[in-house]
Every structure is written in C-alpha cells, then in structure tokens.
Image (cartoon, rainbow, N blue to C red):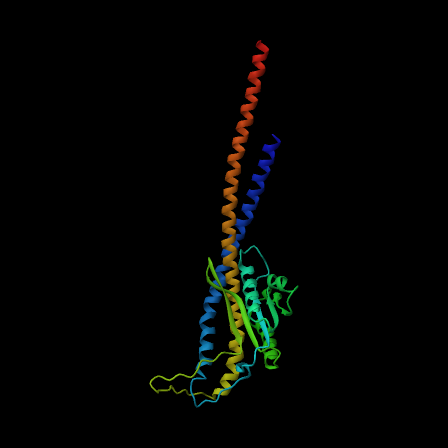
Length: 287
C-alpha cells in the first residue's frame, strides 16, 4: 500500500504541474497577441525609414556623409544581444547565446564587448565576456524613449571610435511557433552602391536639403531598428513560451495517464493478493 500511496502522490504532483503549465500557456497566448500587433505595426515604419536613408545616397550629385556611415578597420565590436528576463521558453534564450558565441568565434582578433538586453543573456556572458552595459530593466517599462536612451550612448561611443562595428543579435518573430535568430549590422549603416539603369539616374529633390534630412533620419532610424528588434524578441519570447508550455502540458498529461494505468494495475494486484490470502486462510480453517 505504501507503493500505491507514492504513486497517488506523483499523480497529484503532475496534475498540479499541468495546471501551472496550462495557465502559463494561456497567459503567454494573451500577451502574444498584443506583442504581435506591436511588431506588425512597427515593421513597415522601420523598413521605410531605412529605405529612405538608402535612397538618399543614390543620386551621384549629392555628397552625403554621416559619422554613422564611416567604415573603419574592424578592431572593436559591440554586440547588442537581446534575450528575455525569464526562462521556461524552450530554446529561445540559448539560441541567441549560441549565435553570439558563433559570431564572436568569427572575429578572434577583435576586441569584443556585449550590451545585454535581458537577464538570461547577461547571466550567460558576464563570467567570460566583457559586458559593456546591461539593459535588462528596459522590459519593466518598454517604450521607444527607454530604448533611445541606451542606443544614444551606443551611437556616441561609435562616433568616438570606441567601437568600429555594432551588431544586433536577437530572435525575429515569424509566427507563434517559429522564431529565427538574426544578426544585423547596426553601425556603420551599410549604404547600397549607386546603380544606374540604361544610364538613367533618378533625381531627388530634398527640402530643406539632404544633409539636414540625413541628420534627423539616421539617429531615428538606428533607434527604431533597435526598438523593432526588442519588440521582435518580446513577441518571439511569448510565442516560444506558449509552445514550450503546450508541449509541457501534453507531456505531463501523457505521464499522468501512464501513472494512472500503473496505479490501477498495482491496486488490482493488491486486491487480488488480499483475496487469495483470505481464501487461503478459509481453506486452512476448514482443514
């Protein structure tokens, strides 16, 4: 009977775990809808900003330059690594850290520093990497202004040549079940080469002038790109956690079913043994 009591305890424990994982799945599903709407609305704006900036460099007559477009020999690199503050999201955080380590291995001679957004990335790199800054608290009040503050610091360090390149490493949201790890070059801004089609060059009219437009749009575009990456990561986190909790609930249900069957068989065997003992005792009394 002690064995049966132990099995009943395990069944009860698994049932409690199922309630927790099921609740977490529903919470993540609710949060996912809001996060998905936010990133879907921001993506076209961010992409259009980058398109405008790239088009500013198309006309050959325009002599356009910006400190954020300056390419230098790659000696010092900053990786802005975006993860979550919490776990229980499958491979969401570990895939970002794995991609970061892969990128670092590609530049063995460079001076690497890391800016972490999310406690999981910070915990993974703080012991063996140089952490430039930790912005895990940005998730407490996530908005464009909060992101702009630390991105402005990154931009200032790039202008001061403390970094030669800046990359973003994050999970891009595809759908609730799919996230793709992305590495994007944030600084310097990569401009397309001037192209002509049948010797016809498109002319652009800038008001007040291209330089002033550039000075306003480039900082906004850089900050928007980081903000978009964080929103992508937030939506990916909720999608990954919803999927992970769904699988955990299914696995717990399968384990519970196996334990119930095992418990019923053990209980049936115990009852059969008791009946056999009673019958054997009655037969002994008769003789």
